[in-house]
Image 1 (cartoon, rainbow, N blue to C red):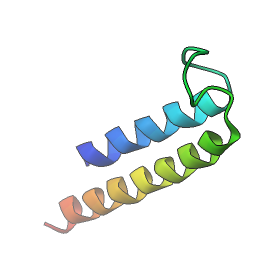
Image 2 (cartoon, rainbow, N blue to C red; image 1 turned 180 degrees about the vertical axis):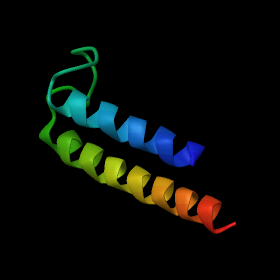
Image 3 (cartoon, rainbow, N blue to C red; image 1 turned 30 degrees about the horizontal axis):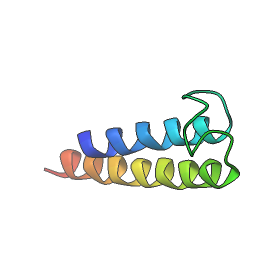
Length: 60
């Protein structure tokens, strides 16, 4: 669950950098539309991993 949460956080940060909301302007991700999409994909992956972790915790 911890790994899923970390990945989810990275996805959110990458998404916001792609939107020019956070991060230094010198970053290659800043204002880059590709990183908006990458951020969303990483965020969803984090949700999936977190969901699997929660499911396994409840199951045991």
